[in-house]
Length: 73
Image 1 (cartoon, one colour):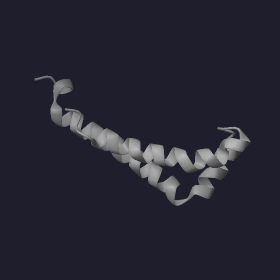
Image 2: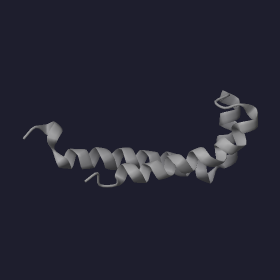
Image 3: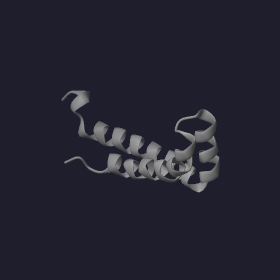
Image 4: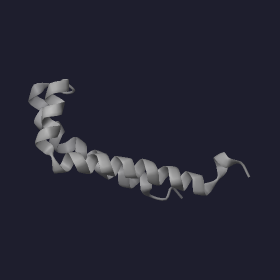
């Protein structure tokens, strides 16, 4: 049995990646003004979209974390 085909390794990687997405998204959800300021300062989005991006991107990231944690079978 190859280590790359190990189901437990895949589960561990999915849980770690999902946990990172959830953790990062949750921090941004709790401090939306700080995240909006970061978006504005880094010029990641046009100025008129920064508020909308600050409100939606953390939720997408948070929900993506749960999809990573789901069983793929």
